[in-house]
View 1 (cartoon, rainbow, N blue to C red):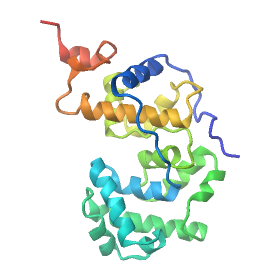
View 2 (cartoon, one colour):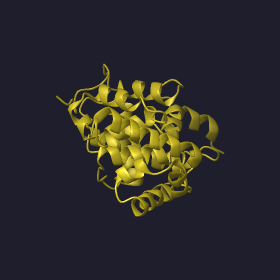
View 3 (spheres, helix red, strand yellow):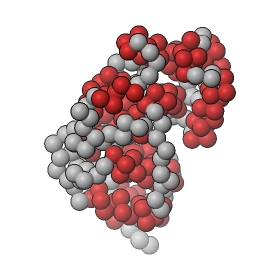
Length: 238
């Protein structure tokens, strides 16, 4: 049976997470509710759009739909044709062969091009099944598990989420996979997949607007009092 509510890791809720969540909600408002895609569509999107801006990410999906009427048509296209169609994303020459290989691999292993069967798996198995394909790491598998119609408890730790988490010292410094595991140990037991999605969106918005990589606006940050990095960067009040 699917375990949409059972936590993946032993959980010791941290009161900082709900407090930070509430502050970011007050600052940015509630993100627009996601209309989940099927798992295969989410996988294609997530494989193609890492390190790519939102506008280009949305455009490449429109380009794919315009060029390939079905995902079977995308799977059967040549790598060169796929690469030309996804040219606006970062590293299309790397992503095109990985995407084709993944689509062919799904078909070979399941018998048809779909990921709907993952709904019957436990969350750990969903993610390990996806991560067998080159180009599908922790961030992509979390996105499919959490953002798609599977709607499982997972946190998609992208570059923005990782930066904000580390600056807030919510977990020790580590890569995205270890950071997600540590964060999942801290989240409240009653946080659903939808709340974890909202949590990710708020951290991403914050990382794009104030907690940026090269020019963080620490003095304007509503989390300044809770942020060791911001406290150091802002310095004493003049």
